Length: 330
Image (cartoon, rainbow, N blue to C red; front, side, top):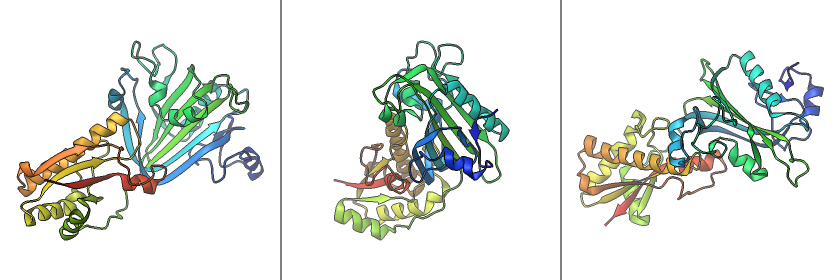
C-alpha cells in the first residue's frame, strides 16, 4: 500500500499527520507526503529561479557543476520532511516515485549515492553530489552527516497547459548524531517548480532619473533588463530600458559607465559570478551594437551575489538583488 498521504484523504488523517509541522507549512498538492513525516522547513515564493542537477557530476570543480544543471523560473515551493523513525530512504523514495508516476510525471534524471552505473557522480570525479544537490544547504544546517550510499535523487516533469511542473526530490539517511530527533532518520528535500511568466512590476526609470541618481550616488540600479533563463541572452522586453540607457549616454557624451551584473544567492557561487559577468557583457555589447555607443565608454563586470541590497531569504529580497547597475567611471 502506498504510504504517501495525498490531499484526497480524510481531514482527520491529514490533521494527525501534520501535527508536528512548523507553522504555516503544508504539502504540495502534486506530491503529498510520506506517511508519518513532519515538515521541518518550508518556503514558498510566487516567482523565483531555481537550479537543479540533471546529469551525473563529472568533476570536483564546483565551477563546472553548472554544466550539469538546468534552471527554471516560476512558483517555487521548498519542503523539508523528516520521515518517521524506522523508515528507509528507499521506502520514502519509492513512495514518491509511485505517486509522481500516477500523476503523469516523467522522470528526467534519477541517481543514487552508490558507485555503480546509476551513481550521482561519475567514477573518479569525487563525492561532490551532496554538496551541489538542492537538499544540501538545508540538511547541512541540521546535521551534515549524510550517509552517501543512502542518497537518492530524482527530477520529474509534468507537462501542463498552464506551465510545466518540475519536482526535484533529494532523499538522504542521516548518520548517528547527538540529536535524538534527527539521529539515523531519513530526510527528504522536496522542491516543486511551476513554470510561469513573471508579471511585470517594473517601474521604468527614464534617462533623466538615471542621470540624477548617478549624480547623487555614483550609480543606478536597473530592474528592467531581462534575460533568458540560465543564459546571458537579453529578452526583447528589455528594450525600453536599453533605450533609456542609450539616451542617457547620448545626452551625456562625457559619461563613462561600468555595467555591473548582480544575482541572488541561488545556485553555485562561481556559476553566479560567471553568469553576472556574461549578462553585463551582453548589455554592454547591445549598447555598442544597437545604440552606437563607443566601446571605450563602457566596461562590464559581474559580482554574483557578493553585493546584496536586501535579504536573500525572501522572494522580494532576491528580486531586488537580481539587477544590473550602472556605475560612473572617471
